[in-house]
Image 1 (spheres, helix red, strand yellow):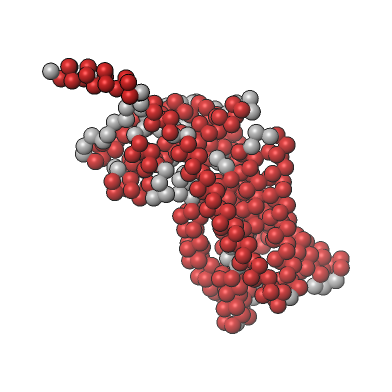
Image 2 (cartoon, one colour):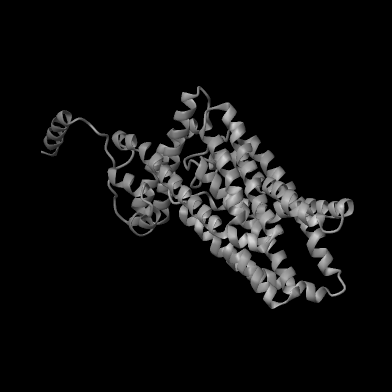
Amino acid sequence: MQVAPAGPHAPMGGARPDPERTRKIVGAVLYALGMLGGGLLLLLVFILPALFSKNSGAELHAMFIGAVFALPALVVYLWIPWIVDRYDPEPWWCLLLALAWGGIAACGFSALINTAVHVTGDAALGKGFGDVLGACVSAPIVEEFFKGLAVFGMFFFLRREFDGVVDGVIYATFAALGFAAIENIIYYSNAAREGGDVLIGTVVVRGILGPWGHPLYTSMTGIGFGIARETNKTWLKWLAPLGGYMFAAFLHSTWNTAATLSNTLVLLMLPLWFLFVLAFFGLVIWLVKRKGKIIRDHLRDEVLMGNLTAWELELITSPIGRLKATFNYGGRAGRKFIDAAARLALSKWHTGRATQGRKLTVSADMIFPLRQDLHRLRAEVSRAMGKQVEQPRPWMPPQMQAPQQQQQQYRQR
């Protein structure tokens, strides 16, 4: 028996068996194998050749320069999806798993396959053709597949941490940013060997003009898996991820092909590219607001049942609710309260959709324990604040409230 872990996306009451224990174990084993394989491939393809080259010092210095330009930018980029995902943020350890997969496993396997395609293309069709084949065909197909595996892993093996389209975009973004960071180290290292001007130009193109390329591509796969999580239609559960992946590969190939054919073509595409990125960010913001509305709609009856107060509902559904809780509602205990309430709302949402589709869902088993968690966490908030917070009361019609008040007054006499 395994106890469901206490955290923002899991019930925090007493010990309860986890019905998805076997699935999680299988996912953990596959993840570990993928990370091990990807790490070894990165070592074989990039690290060892640099270490054993004739001028290993210069090679390692170039890689250090690449890391100096790539990694600090990654820290900045990671804040953006974290800020956007306001209403039900994903657990930090899930985001770290996606980030590490993109940077190690996806990069390692993609590097091996892309290198093999490059060498084969040059050998079979002439020198230079391998570059075109690798950039325009192999890289989009292979890289989007391995980055997309991070999203699939969350969707299939950690289903409780994957609620819909927003979660798919967030996990895809973290996996893609991890991939882009390692890829940038390689590109910046190659540019550093050619001189400062080449390095600056590469940093401008990859780090300033097009830093959201990989996240944008892989987010299409994330949207596909998010639709699959939300829909009750079996055919759409299969087609949406496949369609998202194909569109991700198409966008990736379009950009790489333009860059391969001509730098001028890339410059001509930039206005259209920026418009596409802005439209995508607009879509993500709309999806986040939609998620907040879903949470609010599925917590209204909790106020009527006496599990939440109206003030708590407003706190939970506020875009800055966690910030307010940090200073005005018990700090860490208040943030955990908000997380449990959001998880309760989304569990009810999943249960309602499963009921409509006449299907079973593990979310149904989480509703009652999460309600218990709300009462327990409210007590923790009271202790943290050093005073008793307002307790919710079940709603009753006005005609029933007067007799209740009269009885209370009589008891006080």
